[in-house]
Image (tube, rainbow, N blue to C red):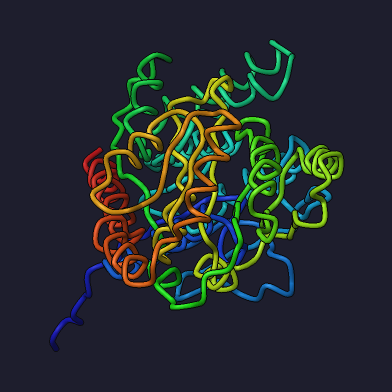
Length: 395
């Protein structure tokens, strides 16, 4: 009697993140694209995440999603120490008793990375940490407590140093990791747009500027309020729309009211990528900022790729690699200026006077899809996960 044929075992990966699709965020889109790429390579993919708001539906495209209820802030986000703990504490048990994967990909915050390091050490599982930025640097700007920053730094470096490998989006983060004496191998995978969702859509261009995404003191988006007030002196028909959430929204609303422009400044809740695309397609330009004194000067403002993938040019005010990218791009991606009100107002005025025409917007979208696709980035992350899996198999 012939013995049964044994099929080769499928490799398996677990993604650990406090945010995942269908929640509207860059991290959700990115991790979902990584899951898609892993499954295309034959991986069985599990996701340990949080329960999304009921109205957003299910984000699975074949991966098995294990969602756990957590605390959310008043804006509905899992952001803040108590909110992170409500995910991290149950995560320890969820990961400890979950089906054993060959490799784990973990998304910040650092407390989640620390939990993953501890459990993966017990179960002898290699893990890859997504070091898109350095959270303890951000905390140094958000709090005056040196103790908080020191504790977070220890937790973060514990998570970073225990990983088999790190992935990040820019060389600036690599340099910062070296300064922190983190010697874990790191790969710059870049970042890109989800071009399956963000693509060119021909629409009449409206007198509208959009800031889409999170805005905190680190971003310095309040500068946009001041610049828009100056733009309105010569372009009263234009509107400014913030889509997302931010810690400084109350102050920004108050400043808009004080400048007499509250009726032309909108603050809207986060929306899905499919709902954001037509708004970007109709905008004169999208806006992004990065404060020069936030200790975050090496960060790349990855939100610009979603805008560029629709053909919507970007106006960036700030410092760091985003400005270099815009200045050096081989396509009309937009304008980069310093973090200064007059410079930003001048750039907005230029876009309002001479908006990018439809043929050039379409060419910009096609260039972005060819050179800055999130799928290409996800494939590079999968290469790192493959290598970590192979190293774990050899041990």
